[in-house]
Amino acid sequence: MNPVVSVTSLSKYFGRFRAVKDVSFEVYRGEIFGLLGPNGAGKTTSIRMLLDIFAPDGGTVSVFGGNMTEAKKNRIGYLPEERGLYQDLGLEPTLLYLATLKGMVEADARRRLEEWLKRFDLYEHRAKKVQELSRGMQQKAQIIATLIHDPDLIIVDEPFSGLDPVNTRLVKEIIEVQRQAGKAVIMSTHQMYQVEAMCTRIVLINQGSTVLYGEVGQIKRDFAGNAVNLVGQGDFGDLPGVLEARRRNGAWHLTLDAGTSPQDIFHALAVRDDVRIERFEVAEPSLDDIFIHVVQQAGGVSSEARTYA
Image 1 (cartoon, rainbow, N blue to C red):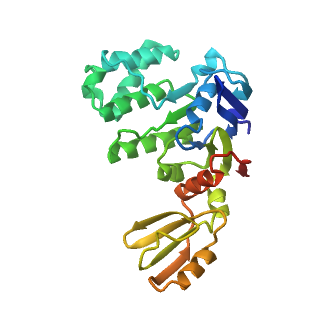
Image 2: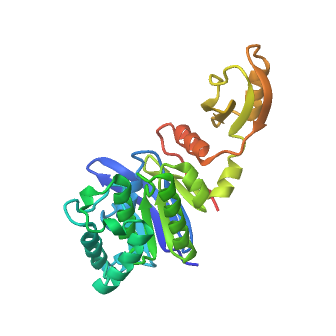
Image 3: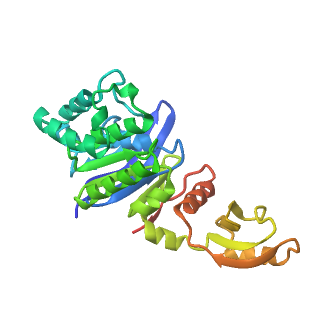
């Protein structure tokens, strides 16, 4: 199967600053693909080059099998992190206008918009100005603008921002329906538990370069041993070789650095007389753990990407 998106060795300068150095990944139909990285890593710049908003200074971007065209842009739905609705206009005319910009006939846009407004409980608010809507309502309106023209490629940046748990679940269900319909979805978010629940594959960008790329399950298996869970009495937050220590419901979760094994932690605890261990186990790392491990291991210097097919 040919990829919907193929990004190879992408780079971008702003003056002397190299915002993106070496980013590569592919996205396929019928998958939700996670685009991850710390703030300032180059995620948004990479998305803008993919969308032909910025021209790359190096590397290549292929969308739907070739270079971007105006016709291809109409097959893409993009939810940016910085929202862009017209605040002084009514909700309904704003969304209709944005739909026609994507090539929709107004009659079709009206019919489809009514369905989306009712699905998001915004139909009774359609005559209000956008600025009169709550933050969560505006977020739902932005999602409608992203999906109303039935795009084949969907790119969503922080799609759950401002949403309560009920609407977060609704948006997750809608994104999953899009995936099941064969759409390619690229999701960028800092909510790692959402990525873990929804994405089949991810790319992690750090310092402008791809540092981790592949299938989520395989990545987690390959990083097993970089975290431990333990229960006991004492303070376990100051152990050497621990990148992060989190305590929840009386249990500790320790994320380990690259040079520390679970056995090292166990031996360090065995010689301490100020702690008591009741349970100690190697944990399957979360994407949070892996994210912290990879970014901190880089230490501000991009390393060769690790790829997990």
